[in-house]
Length: 248
Image (cartoon, rainbow, N blue to C red; front, side):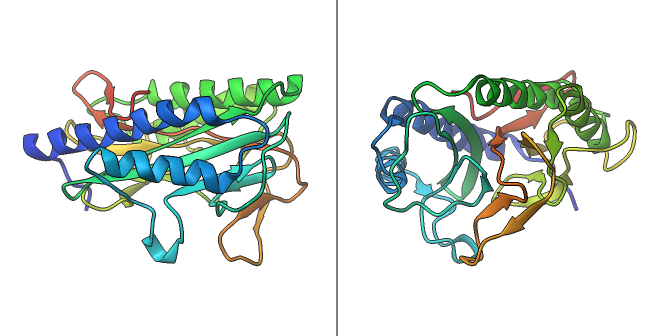
């Protein structure tokens, strides 16, 4: 069952989304060579709590930290640690915040210092794929329209589309129906209606689309160990388009 949110719920989701967007803005200047992923995680958690919210991911399904922080070939669900970021790395930071029982969810991938041209293009083209996917959203569209636009963009740049991991509905739970894959056929899948809230999140790889899970039972990496990027916004479906709730 895909829920249509009430005006009150939408307002709380807007606040939760703003906190997530503001947290990304807050930690961005700290993303430099030498900082550890744990330090970034702690900065984000402190900021979220100062905003009167709690980290959505901490304890979710047993995840130990506030943010998922994934470096280079790590696609998603990287566990913050004492690993120091290095010049040329790319780092994906997935942040969730819960405000009065409602969630915001947004991931973004960042360059660490100066990165290679192919990593720069991976970041640019994955962000482009996110907005191509979002462009398909309006009342009466279907979920397959989003995935079609994401994969069409990815294919143009010969990027691997991760199929095992998907976007999702967002509300009083971090993950709600519907699943929002990054591939699909136009005019297929669940119907989108005004008032629904979903997270669209392309995960695109520089090489193969194949992935596997590390022994920590969280971190997902690319099978060929080439870099991956991850961009995500939580959006409200409107009559003629969408409203980004996790603006940065």
